[in-house]
Image 1 (cartoon, rainbow, N blue to C red):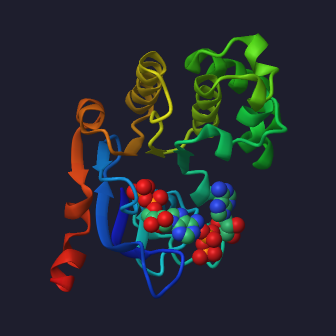
Image 2: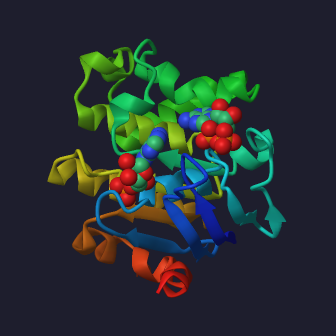
Amino acid sequence: MLELRTVTAGYDRRTPVVRDATLTVTAGEAVGLLGPSGCGKSTLARVAALLHRPDAGEVVLDGIPVHHYRHRAPRDRRTAVGVVFQQPRLSADPRLRLTDLIAEPLRATGRRSSVPGRVAELAETVGLTPDLLTRRPHEVSDGQLQRACVARALVLRPRWLICDEMTAMLDASTTAALVRVVEDYRTDTGAGLLAVGHDRTLLNRWCDRTVHWDTVTASAAKTLA
Ligand code: ADP
Ligand code: ADP
C-alpha cells in the first residue's frame, strides 16, 4: 500500500498548500485524484513520489514510513515509485537523447547491462521509433517527449506510479495511447497508480475509483470550519 496520512506540505511552513491530506492506494489499484487547478495536487503528487518532504504527516510504502528522510529517500524506496509530470519539457534534461533519457534511471542505479534491451522494449511499448530515440527533446513533439517520459518512469519497474496531469498537454490519440501503456503495465505487474488531474471524465474512465481533493483534505476543512 501507498499511504499518505494527514500530510501537510508546502513551500513555506506558515502557509501550507496541502493540509491534512489522507489517501491510500492499494497494490494493483488505480486511484484518480481530482481537483481544480492550483489546489495543491501537484504538491501532494510530489510528496507521494518522495520528491518533496512533507512538513507533517506520514508517507508509508508497504508499511514502511518513508517521509522522514532528511533529503531524498533511500534508493530502493525512490525506485519503488515512478512519476510522470504534466510538462515533459520541464522534467526532461534537454541535453539527453531520448534513448539516454529513458536509460538514465538504469545507469543511475548501476544496471548498465540491461540498458539496450530494456530501452528497445520500452520504446516499442510507448510507440517510439529508433529514429526518434536518437533525437533530443527540442527535436520531438510534446507527445513524443511524453512517450519517452512514460518509458523512463517504467524503466525500473516501479511498484507505484504517479501520473500528474500526464495527458494535459497531449492530443486525444496520444492520451489514449499513453493511458493504455500505463494500464497494460498495471495489469501486467500489479502496480498501483495515482493519477492526478482536473478532467473528471478521463479519470473516471481510467481509474477504479476517483476521489475529490475536498474529500482527501476533509479533516482540514472541518478543522478550519
Ligand atoms: P495543482 O497541481 O492542484 O494545480 P500545485 O500543487 O501545483 O496545485 O500548487 C498549489 C499551490 O502551491 C499554488 O498556489 C502554487 O502557486 C503553489 N506552488 C506550487 N509550486 C510551488 C513552488 N515550487 N514554490 C512556491 N509555491 C508553489
Ligand atoms: P525538502 O527540501 O523540504 O526536504 P524538496 O522538495 O526540496 O523537500 O526535495 C527533497 C529532496 O528531493 C531534495 O534533496 C531534492 O534535491 C530532491 N528532489 C527534489 N525534486 C527532485 C527531482 N525532480 N528529482 C530528484 N530529486 C529531487
